[in-house]
Amino acid sequence: MIGKVKIGTSFGGVVRYVIQKPEAEIIYAEGVRTQSAEKAIDDFNTQRKMNPELNRAVGHIALSWSEKDSDKLSAEIMTERALEYMQKMKITDTQYLLVLHKDKNHPHVHLIYNRVGNQGKTISDRFQKERNQKICKEITLKYGYHLGNGKSLVNRQQLKGADKIKYELHDAIKLAIRNVPSWQELEVILKGQGIEMQFKYKSGTSEIQGVSFCKGEIKFKGSEIDRSLSYKNLGEQIKLNQRQQRSWQQNAEMIISKTEFRDKPNIMETDSYERGSSDSMLEDLLNPVRQTYENDPYLKKKKKRNQHLGHSL
Image (cartoon, rainbow, N blue to C red; front, side, top):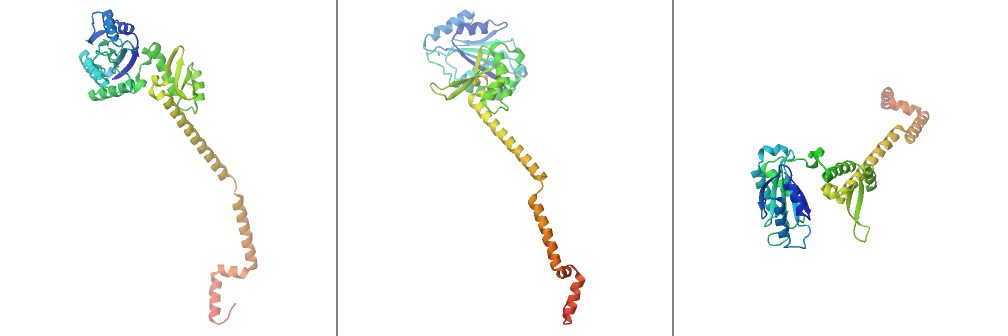
């Protein structure tokens, strides 16, 4: 199970999209009328007036499961999982709609909720995406649902509009960041694919705080595309690439140096050998008897015998 979290400003657009989708089915609702999209929109907007300062009052979360889980899921079970998800996400005491869609091969529902609660309090969206990932994984493991491998399993051919661009950016950046040793090289590679990279600076300074990527008129922060593509994480990967390249270069230089040293004649050893041979020959010439004696066991015996008789050589 995975969740796709969005926060918006207009109930009209999202409610009409979700309810009026072909084969859409409202499977649960709280605090809003379900006879038509317009009645639901009116109910959401009436409650949001209790907190007029909250501009982004629209919560929209798509909860999806793998095709492999289809046999385990029904409208009732998906409702139960969605309500459990909401409790864990602290989306409580507010209006919401839960709508089942059947336009994709994988089971999924859309949750629309009012961030202005029933008492006029704001439902926080702080760290919502991080909590969403954690809770979806918890529910997936708890009920034995298929645990997908992130974005690699998404069917790119079914994507349209901004979602399609988002995954194109994801794939291009993931491939480019593998070996580049600098931000400049990453920018050049992406630019060749029609992707523009933009840095966000701290107000009034040259300190970089974030990075965004654009393709055409669509722009995403790196962290919106994937947590691994945030400015911090991309920077860490670039540093790792730099260390690896330095290591490879040092190893290559060491191998080349050893090869050259092994193939090159050792002048000192040659000179030493030649000097040693010359000195040995000179010593043999100056001390021929001694050298012969030391190397001839017969002469050793003869000398011992003469010494015993009181003579010497």
